[in-house]
Amino acid sequence: MLIDDPTNAEVLAFLATPAAHGMTGGDAVTRIDTHAAAVFLAGSRALKVKRAVRFPFLDFSTLALRKAACEAEIEANRAFAPGLYRGVIAITREAGGSLAIGGHGAAVEYAVNMARFDETRTLDRLAGTGPLDDTLAEALGHVVAHGHAATPPADGAAWIAALESYIADNDAALRATPGLFAPSEVDSLTAACRAALTRVTPLLRRRADGGLVRRGHGDLHLGNIALIDGRPLPFDALEFDPLVASGDLLYDLAFLLMDLCERGQPRAASLVFNRYLAETGRDSDLDALAALPLFMALRAAIRAKVTMARPAFAASPTLRDDTRNYFAFARRAIAPPRPRLVAIGGLSGTGKSALARAYAGLLPPLPGAVVIRSDVERKALFGIAETGRLPPAAYAPEMTARVYARVATKARRAVMAGHSAIADAVFARPDERAAIEAAAREAGAAFLGLVLEADLATRLERVGGRVHDASDADAAVARQQESYDFGPCGWTRVSAAGTPDQTLANVTRAVDPV
Image 1 (cartoon, rainbow, N blue to C red):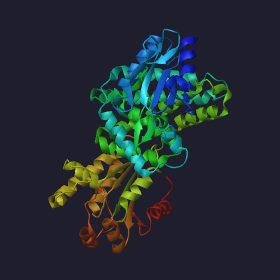
Image 2 (image 1 turned 30 degrees about the horizontal axis):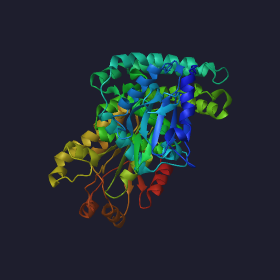
Image 3 (image 1 turned 135 degrees about the vertical axis):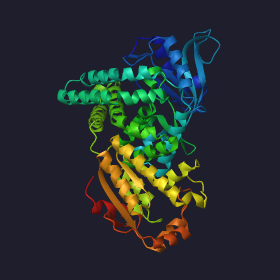
Image 4 (image 1 turned 180 degrees about the vertical axis):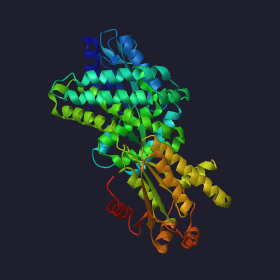
């Protein structure tokens, strides 16, 4: 709720004037208000002032608390956007009673001093204009993974203990507006979240012991990511409560994945998800996918709760619709369908990886299937980057056997955690196909095997046009593979001679709906 603080209100009114920033002529100040802060964009600078408010989840009711929050915000954003945050600056009362930014008088308020960026280039606005492009989505997964690598460890036991209170707080908030949600639906969501928490708590404890509960971004939704110089940059990390900002790294990522899915960006969500997993390279994250439905449901319910706390909520049909959408998403996320293991085989140049990327976003549970690519796993075995080149010895039969074993093992782990997986490899040998089918059976998952087919000329054109790709296959490899005999194969054969979109359409026509 809003606290009666005349000085805070006076400062906000002052910072909205061009004169406060030394601006003249037709220059104007852009003010952006949230439930907890006001941001003033003036020239090349942005000043963010905490509003005098108190909510169950934050307290900015005193000047000391607001100053501490500003200082915490600088520290919280160090891992993700160090160049954007310049420091804390005082708003002062000068001798004549006037206010000044960084003056010589007594400090009456504090602001976070930031470099200004184009506010129309935040990802929530870009997502509102159409699908985010694949390059941006891949870059976003990369940026989040590397930001997480720089985050400090947090108290895992305290965070795990707090999850029950988050569920209880969500339950209370969702019941606070009569008629918005059916009580039985709230009961169902709360019960499912509590059951999921009980189920995954041992897993979360192991993750905490392994250092994977950290002080992350905490508020990683699309409105807090800007495209700056062509690069996605997360900003406005949560600063008001270290515990709330902490969590399993997949819990931090889940906010972004939830927001992408809820906004109708399933392909981007899948690409972010898979790029993140590829960048971190933690096989243990495959086991942790068992907690992802809970993480995404909690994030959606919290987003609903925060939306309901906005001052304009009662009078805004749009905000009420947003809240209902978040609630519906939480209910969908917490009840994932049975996972599927899909194996995509075919000779080099048939478009296996392009199909895997496109098909992954269509496979439930959210945010799409984990893609496990033999080319990437081979590079990982040798400890080199995805686009590095391997020597011929890396393709010896014994090494190829290790690669296929690794693909099957990782796919099994993902599916046993309740998540769908796509295995992307040639799968020319019957024993390779049998192994991936066995992985599905052992995990209790539905299995789909696909073999893509394209003529040699098409395959040669494709392998010749590859840049910055994990595959080392060239024209010589493509020609040599013409002699491969797949033997008896019960997998579904799919024409891949056309565009990637046509191949995807061929697959969706050839197999049962997912």
